[in-house]
Image: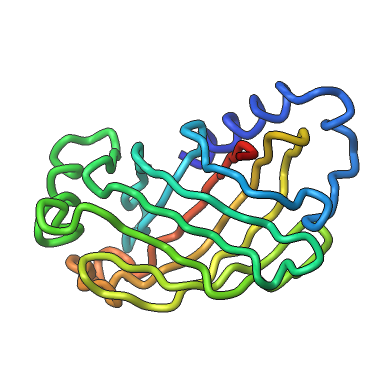
Length: 193
């Protein structure tokens, strides 16, 4: 899954103009604007298992927007929704289990959402986004690290990573055999709106 995310990001970067592929990306402030998250994004996750292995997958249905505010990056906003029924691990039995009441309960909770509260710039082209994640009827504060990876004026891409405790959302079935931590490694692409 991580390899797939890397290849998608590589293909996206290769499609940009030579000027956009230059060694120096703009600062987040220079890339300011309102963007809609595009379907080419990759929302990948992994849950480790004692002794090796674990579960890796991705979500196929999602939507959202982000607004990078020039001169006021701290008040930038990110709104993101994903559909848990779109989870895919490549194993039908595992997918059905993840959609069941034991994990996502997607028949009763059809959306997992994230709404940002603040953005802290950590470098010229990086930031930490903190906000409220709501899943399975429960909400908690979560943070994600973001790094700008491509920009062409109208299109933008970020690598987004984060770690979420499943127990906060009553999804910790199988612990301690399976880690309580879900690790996200995402490639988020956006198109200027």
